Image (tube, rainbow, N blue to C red; front, side, top):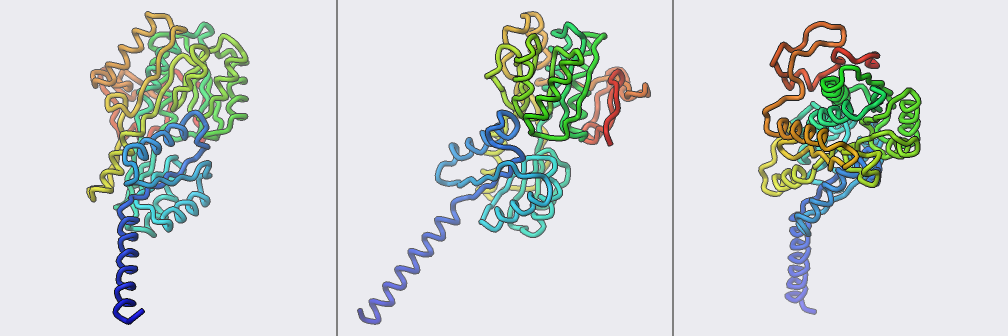
Length: 359
C-alpha cells in the first residue's frame, strides 16, 4: 500500500470515527435517579413510566439510563457523578433527599443539566419540579370523610417535610368539611418505600379504629393490609394501584410525569433549556385522579368529581379560609387563599388535627 493510499485510508478512518462521534453526540443521554425500585407500584413506578414515555417519544434520538433504589445522601452523589461522567446531558433526581447531592454534583459538571423533584434549591444548571399533590389529597379527603363509619381516618406519612404536611392538612380540611366528627391518626413511617413498615403502620391504624387509610408512602402494602382486614378503604398513592380495585382501593392520586419529561428533554435537544421552577397540579394534568370506583356511592362520587373540576379550573383553592393553625391562631381569613410561599414551607398542622409534627 503506497503512502497516498495510507493517507486516504487514514483520512477515511478518521472521517468515519468523527462521523461516529457526531452520531453519538447527536443522541441525547438522559439519566434518572430513583429512590425506590421501579416495580414499587407507586412513586418510582410512575417516574419510570415517564422515562419509558421519553424513549417512546424520541426513539433513537435519545438514550435513557437509570439507577433505582438509591439512598438519599452520599450514595446519591456517587450515582450522580457516575451518570455525569458517562456523558449524560440531563439528569432527573426524583426524591426530596437528593436536593443537596444534586446541587453538589451539578457544581462540578456545569455543562450537564439537572432537574430535581420536590426540592426548592436551584442553580444555573439545576431546575426544580413538583406536582401539587395536595390538590389530589383534597379530593381524597372529601371521599374519606363521607365513607368512614368509625369517623377515624388513618394516615401513613413518610417524612415531616412541607410536601407531606400539606397533604395531611389538605385531606383533613376536606374530610372535616363534610364530617365534623372526623379524626385523623397519623403514623410517621420515616421511609418512602418499605413494604413491611407500611403494612405494620396500616395494621396499627386499623387496630386503632381507622376504616379509611391514606398514605404518603410508595408501596401497595397498605392496600394489602386493608384487604386482609376487610371493610377498610384505601387510595392509590402516586400510581393507580388498580389491582386493589374496587375495594379496598376506591380511587387514587396519579403522578403524570411523562409530558414534563418529554418537554424538558426537548428543551435540551433544542438548546432552549433554562433552570426553572415548575409546580403544576390537576389543571395542568400533572396530578390525575384515578377512577372513583363503584364502591363509592354515586352521590359522593359526583361531589368528588365536582371538587376535582373546581380545583382544575382554578375556581377553588384547597387552602381557602377561614382556616386556623393547630393552636387556634388565625391563618387565613374568610375567602383568603394560601400563597405558594407558605405552602412550600408549610411546617404546621391546621386546627382540628391532633398530635405534633416531629422535628
